[in-house]
Length: 332
Image (tube, rainbow, N blue to C red):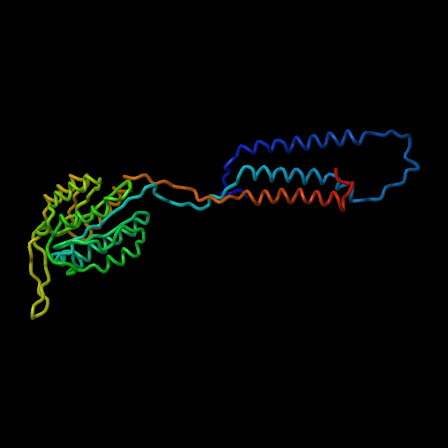
C-alpha cells in the first residue's frame, strides 16, 4: 500500500500508540458499566430473541479507531516519490566554435572534415540535455549561428544548415574564439566552456588567438581546442571542367597555438586524425565536464495526505450517522 511513498513527518506515527490504549480503556469501561447480577434460577426469564444490535454496539470504537489511524497517517504527510527529476543547480554553458573554411572540405574524414565535425558534435549535443549550448562559426570572420539555448532541436537544425561559403574564406581563430567568449561572458553558469575546432592556423581577423584566450581566462571560460586533420597531406576536391578532381593539400594545424589557448584557459588540446578519434575527443570532453559540476537530484513529490484525511472524516461521519439513526442507543 505504501510502496513508493515517503512521510515528511514520520514522528507522528508515535501517536498510533493511542489506538491500543483507547481500545484498552474502552474494554475496561465496558466491564465497569456492565457489572454483574446473581440469581438462584433462570426459570421465568424469557429467552431473548436473536438480534444484530448487541453485536454492533462495539462498532463505534472500531470506526473511531480507524478514523484516528487515518488521521495520524495524514498528519505524517505521505508523499509520492515515484518520479525523479534530474537537474543541475547552476548548469554548464557550452559554445561550440567550428571552423567552416574551405580546407574543411578535405576528405581525410568521412564524408569530409566539416560534415564529420557537424555529425559528431550533434551527437555530443544530444547527450547533454540539461546544458545550454550555442554555436559560433568562423572562417575569414565569425558570427553566432545559434545563441545559448536549452532547445537543442533548434540548435541541431541550425547546425545542420552550416556549410562552407556562408562567410568569406580564411581562418580567423582569434575572432571565432572571441565571439564565443562574448556569448558566455554574461553567463552565471558554474562552468563556461568553448569547444574550438579548426584545421588550420590563424591568418585572418583583428584579434590574435592568444589575446582571445587571455580574454577567455578573464571571464573564467575554459577552452578545449581540437585540431582536425590527418598528418602530412589530405585529399581535397577541386571543381574542374572535367568534373571534381582531387588534389593533395598539406595539413596545416597550428598545434602550438591551440595548445597555448588550452593551457591559458585551463582546458585541453586534442588532435583528431579521423572520425573515430574525433568522436573519442568529444566523449572525453563530455566526461571531463560532467566531472566538474555537481548534479543534484530532486524527488518530484506529490502530497497524498488528503485521501487519508477524507477517510478519517468518512469514518467519523459514518459513526455519527449510525449513532443517530439505525443504531441509535446501541453504540457506545
